Length: 87
Image (cartoon, rainbow, N blue to C red):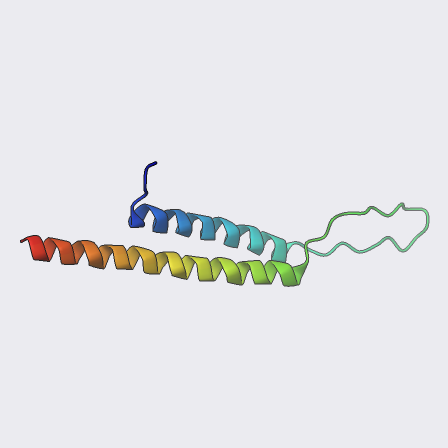
């Protein structure tokens, strides 16, 4: 079993947060579909993204990005401390 470095884990978390934020932003920006008012036009059941859920997902991705940034900063500080001790 190989253990990832903290930097790799933080970077992977940032990439995941960016992907989640992109998807949430797309879901928020999608226009809402209106049902056809005339009976001659058939209505289509199109799955609409829930704007509230999309905004919560965006907030969750933001927090994930912040946590991943903390992981990277802590890794950098730890490596810096180890280098200072060894030198």
